Image (tube, rainbow, N blue to C red; front, side, top):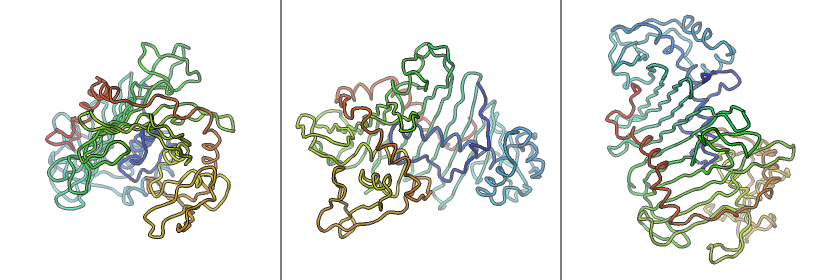
Length: 474
């Protein structure tokens, strides 16, 4: 397996600890691959002094590491990185990153560890008290950042990269203590390779993300969630290709699930409860041909399901569609709000500042003022029909948007989204919306009892059961 290479073309600054938390299902899995890879690559630059220190033997006193020596080592092992680009990235994330540093280099439980000495005269194994630490054991490299926002609540941001001849594994963990328990998010990405029936070799991906927030606390909801695909997946020119040994499926032939147990009140169409509920999101992905002839992948049927924790009783089951007929059996009202377009656009760009409606996306595509109509008090908004974007309810007031903010905190003018808006509007009718059967209680029961779900949940939740879940020694 080719070892992950840091390259200037993909060397980017990741300023947050979680990848697009507002994004759902397949779109989240896709974003996690990009985000986690770039985060590991950024770490190779940001931790280059500690990386060099790990080549030195362990000792009880700090080492003096010069930036010239460390930079020379980095460049020798990353020959495709442009020095100016490296310097730009490093100084952005760490203004003092090119200064000579005093570094502790210790061994702990068979693992090599390095962290900045920060003025101490002696080095101990207690790296977890430091703002930054790095470890290496075999082929596995781990990076840790610690933030102390107050004296009682440290936050840990941990990434790791491991590889064998057959696969690569990237992890991203964000942990903090809340009311005496560890909560946070754990991400694991396995990249491997398979041989297709066509003879082509292609990468496969197995992406999973587990989040735990504990029981509800006052007005704060609690629970847990697991994002995963039903099998590892790959991309190829032909959707008919099959993987050797059925080890993976083409992207369009797998399903993406987010299984959440939500400890919060819920009020839906059929289900109203104050007890915990299961919330299931299921994504069917299809290939769409853009106007320029290129292929893009969108969720054709983004399904949702909600039921009591007992998996019995009334439930809500639905799908995002641009237009729905009145159907009492499926529990739908007549509507034409353009939900499919809105869901695809907002998840593609992981917007958090605002969720543009169909009509606003059409505004972007057609160079019109991007306008939302809000109630007088600003707490509600008017959702127009996609067939009459000029209509608005009496008493609402227009608000024109010129910029949107994504979950990375980046602000972009609405004009930056014009081509994407045109693409999504262009492809929206290429595949029927809502043609897949909706989720049922029996399917959900099978899902939460399946070996795939249970094994992934056990694997990713184990860190929260460690006595030291922030450890980078394993």
